[in-house]
Length: 508
Image (cartoon, rainbow, N blue to C red; front, side):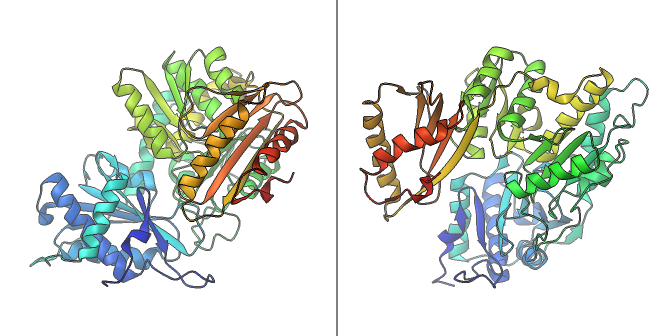
């Protein structure tokens, strides 16, 4: 074990690895043996954090539908039990449910683990860790991996017990209660979604529970819901609300079944998106606008924190139409959430942190990025708007959307890609200063955002460095037809003066 590279398993604030063979040039590095050591490491880390001996700790564990899930989960549980901690086996679960197990009365687990690799390919898996304070930070993962590398753990004289619990039903019931109380239907309190047809696409991930355990008890007609059965081969589409094929699939289902609303989850249910009754996507800027409209009705004038690639039309909608404050921050759901928490601590009220990827976290829900909570808020509004003879999209009727938008991924062909990428951004800043109709957007926390003010371009672009990969994503939006191509053509002139960049992706 000495030569195993533990640091390769760290992916920001998660652990991610290759769990199954079968993909060329990918060697398995998340084995049951490794998983057992990680289970022991988490117990050691937790003992220090909560100041309790291992024998007094209770740790919950759940998984998504990945093929490697059952074997790895068993290995983690055995590792935890071997050093004396009690294990609650939740079987199939969602990432947000695993956090909730640490604060739900009757469970109050000291820590929890979710086995998932979100929307990554079928051969990957990983571990997400929680305490009652929320998800672990990057440094915590580094510390857990350091403990794993030492692999020195005292076995318990009597191992901890492993017991099965149906926590997903407890977790789902909180949505049933919340939707009932929030809609407060005058004629049908217990079944406030009666008369509404809601189609769910779980992408064969862990989100299928939402149909039987939330929507049906509330009276919704769920005919047409699809891919609810967990299947780690993901045979129908990638379980990812950002994936075009996945969104097309749920839009088609809504149209085909003449549904009032469509819901799509990612594999582990920490992200979601929706579809309106005419089959139009409610994701990215539209989803942010919709949940912002709801939150700003409840908390007027408060701040909405988003990632850096949201559109100018969204800023205008939040600030002019909804009279809120739009605070753009860095990409990365943890960055956005932590910034919203920071603003609150500094005295600036912020109730929503949301990324264009569909990660949305609300202050009222422990700043937990929970896809099921987010769509439950939308369903409450859907039921209320039906009572008022209105439709949900009415809330975002004034949202101005770009005529065109595109994302390009420019590859960096050097080892020290971060330093090189930062130099490219500095050079671009100098280039922009020579362009009369391009202006640097102030208060930008990531990369360089430029406003393109001429009538023929009327838009913006953002060049930034990827969080983990040797790539510079370039987002471009324009309010006029052909505007993206014009902006890109001018950028090409700049990129041709730089070194070690593969900008072949810019051909449009």
